[in-house]
Image (cartoon, rainbow, N blue to C red; front, side, top):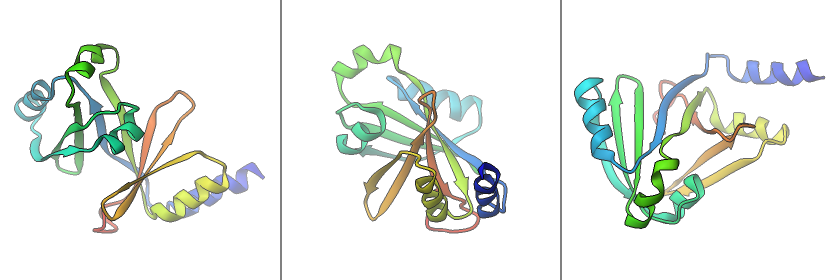
Length: 154
């Protein structure tokens, strides 16, 4: 029975899944932007403010965050910096990788399969779309995303 369940995921993801981004929580976004743009060849693609309602769900931090997206080819780095002096003082123990993006051929079907497998899924409404996260047994967050080469909705 276990093999049958695993085969459903393999059939659902006919193309190889891939990682398309890493989310990093920091108390010094300028330092990371400088490193990734000047040393690693990434380009700054976007910067905006994310409301505490989204940040609380992702990071369990009840403060707005500065959000910066850096890109290099198909790879993205998402940098999150809380906009609170109080959080900056406590951040040394929680900075670093927070999540990674797992791209699948059909995100909705994949999420349905995860539901059938009783995987806890965090759903975050952002603008007109839903962002899905799952957490592995060690607490690492994984954002479930559609493969951008298959669809332009992402």
